[in-house]
View 1 (cartoon, rainbow, N blue to C red):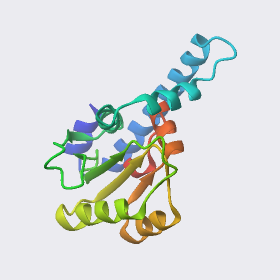
View 2 (cartoon, rainbow, N blue to C red; view 1 turned 90 degrees about the vertical axis):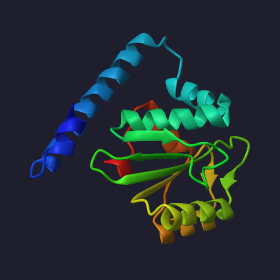
View 3 (cartoon, rainbow, N blue to C red; view 1 turned 90 degrees about the horizontal axis):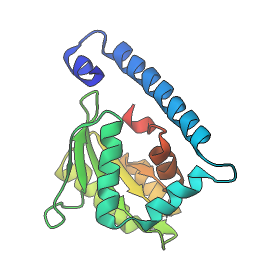
View 4 (cartoon, rainbow, N blue to C red; view 1 turned 45 degrees about the vertical axis):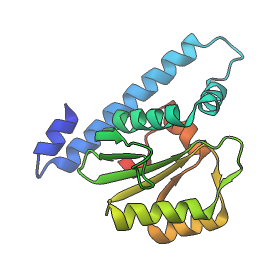
Length: 176
C-alpha cells in the first residue's frame, strides 16, 4: 500500500517513505521479539541464518536475495536467465523509482570476492544498463582492491555479515 502511495505522490513522497520505514522497523522488532520468545534458551538464531545461507545453491541464493529486495519495497524484481544475464543476476526498481542491478555470489568456501568480478559487474551495471543502484551481494568478504573498485564505481557491496543481518530483517541502507 505504501509503495503505491509513494509512487503516486509528489510532494509528500519523503514523508511517506519515512513512515513506511518506521512501520517496517516496528514490524521487525515485533518479529525479533516473537522469535526470542519462541527460541529455546541456548539457541542462537544468528547462527541459523549463517548456516542457512551457507547451505543454499547459487540459484536458491539469487531467489533469496530477490525475496529480500521485494520485502524491502522493491518492485518489478526479476531474476534473470543465466545465459543472457550479462553479469547482472537480478533487476528491479526501488520504492522511490531508482533502477537496481544485483550481482549475487554464493561463495561460502572463499574468503573474498576477487577484484575482477567487481570490475565486470561495475562495467555491466554502469555502462551496459545505466542503473541507478548497483549491489554486489556475496556470502564472503571483499578484497581490499574489490572495495576500492566499488568505491570508485559507486557499487554498493554487501558482504557475509551484512547479508546475514539483511536476512534477519535489517533493511539495507542503500534501499532506503
